[in-house]
Image 1 (cartoon, rainbow, N blue to C red):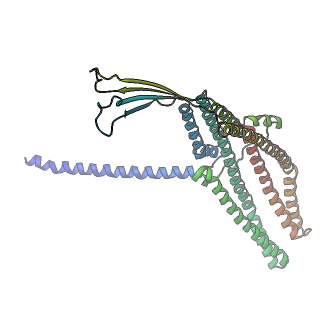
Image 2 (cartoon, one colour):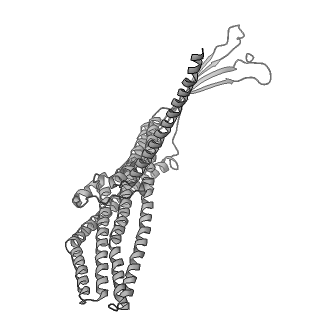
Length: 441
């Protein structure tokens, strides 16, 4: 007993130690997991946001397109319901019950009635109703596809704006140390009397302008990020990739114009016209008669004077519409349906003109920007850089003024920024052309 009693505390102590070590191990693993997760999240946050990734996020998270698709599904269900015959109606009642005196068996015409009523709409109105809703569903789906294209264009332009300001900040920040060094050297030379006060003031002024320019660029960059966040949410806070898409070539204008006919908004306009055609057919059906069939059964209780039970009744009636007065109803409805179709066709023509006009304008701008970019890359950038270096060498040799040096380096900086702007503008123009001309991703 004493031996067993002596071992028991050690066993309990070991269990406590094991539990304590297991708890500590779990805590250690939790710390490691949280650290790794935080590191992974930070790495994801710092990972550059490519244009393709931004497009995927925007299309996946866009609620407007989902709303249109849901509406199209609703129209699909409506089209099925609109093509069905009206429900059979049941009629239950008591007829000719005496209220002065007596009861159910007093009067011979007192009946417990049970009836069925069935309505038959005129002509092909059910089919016309179905086609109308089917066309509306097609229109809504095409509008959803058009919304998808518009979202793709918008997120592309927002990403490109963010890229432009990020790239511009990098360009200006790259030359900032040069202006700092130039101001420092000029200040040193002025202190020993080798440079004038005007040179010093000019150097300080240009350095201040560069600082102000960086602040303005940062502000514009923040605004661009805010615009991008409309489409991709918090992912917009990630730095965008440093490389733009290679959108340097586009199909011929004639090919793009022919693709306009298959643009989702044009297809939606066609579906709208088909819906208006179905509306005309529906209005024409109102000139035809609708039918209502009533079948009834009347139960009678009691007996005849000769002692025989009273006979039950069966009744059948047919009701039909008589559209004799058509001038202010059927005629007006048909006239309104024709006007709706004319309006839909005119809207389609207006849409095609607007799309074609914008396509031609964007196509011309794309080619013009391409020529300007080529000019910058073959001449302006090289000349601006060479001019800046030459002016600095001449200044160091006292063969040029300080103002010439500042002007040359500012021109070089502006040329690089303008080159980036032209590239971004061309890419934004391509995004619009891709929307209109159906250029795939």
